[in-house]
Length: 141
Image 1 (cartoon, helix red, strand yellow):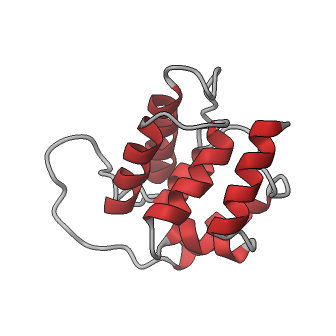
Image 2: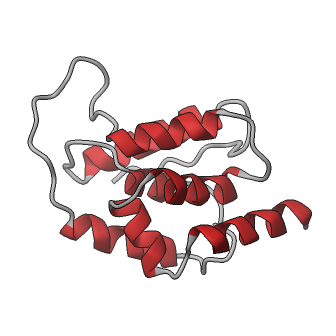
């Protein structure tokens, strides 16, 4: 599997780099869509309030048990974004405080009612309230 780490995780191309890395990760795993779990795995930098490596382990476990939809591949980029991954990217494209490593988990928790990303974050004990607290802490310090 090819590792992809953006040079400037919070620069002007951060979301493009995140999406490219998430798509590469989905292809490497043989998955037919990019989920919020893939976005979390592609995230450069440490997630505030989460031990290093714990997020990747939780996401990998959830992805391994995820039921993949079978659908015709639409025209456009492959693999396509899941509905919730698209919602997360739209949310992140707006201006927001704090680094991408703080905003992405919060966006997953706010946009996805269930699915790989949210399940992995919940497995780590990360809730929307805790993510807000961690985000404010990261922005302040």
